[in-house]
Image (cartoon, rainbow, N blue to C red):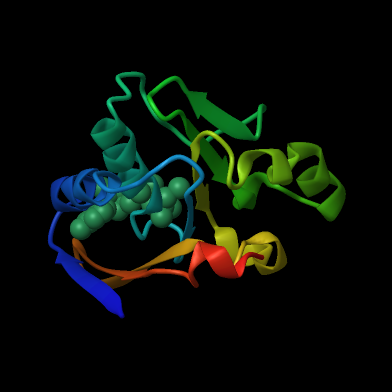
Length: 146
Ligand SMILES: Nc1ncnc2c1ncn2[C@@H]1O[C@H](COP(=O)(O)OP(=O)(O)O)[C@@H](O)[C@H]1O
Ligand SMILES: [Mg+2]
């Protein structure tokens, strides 16, 4: 069953992310998708805030993964920065997914094959000036495995 949220401002998207973070637990993978400017980073900043991260959260650049020292830690990926499957391999995703932190991946649809079936999927759509539709789909049960 999906959840749906219509956000009318960046602030609402941020607080949507913050609320979303509440029930997250270590090992969760959150796969974000949607076009440029649709609110993925703003939502991630809300998640970070919900986890208690006080550092500024921006898209990871040269390190390819932003690591934040919350409890559980937050790992922020942006597949838009990944140009090849070789680059992807250097991330060592297996070490992160299902591990001790929470993984949030922007542009997850660029490399769909690496996203576990049990990931939580959040898609973003522009539905007007300043308006975004945010849809959340829970993945298959983790006991099913990947
Ligand atoms: N309702 C909204 N929710 C989120 N961002 C919005 C909204 N309305 C306008 N914006 C603007 O859209 C942009 C979203 O940027 P960002 O989160 O970086 O997108 P993405 O990471 O998906 O490329 C920001 O400039 C933000 O101010
Ligand atoms: Mg972004």
